[in-house]
Length: 99
Image (cartoon, helix red, strand yellow):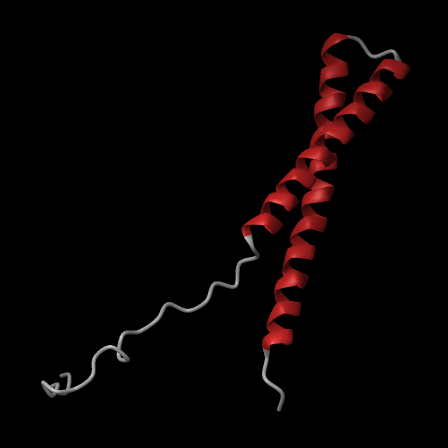
């Protein structure tokens, strides 16, 4: 059961504030997304060039291109996630008060 409040108590300072988010900034997340898209496009171009040089036909060219694009995007995504996590930890350590 909650303690009764006094009518003259100042309630303006009793309003709880939301905790600060540990998410990276929107700009950082957008840059990570764009880097993943560029990595996927680069992987797709490399896969397409490889398929054309290898003499693959029709569906095989598309499959090699798709797999290369997914591989490129996946690799860049791993690096982006690790970078965002490291950035978050660095921000937390930097804001930690000295002991």
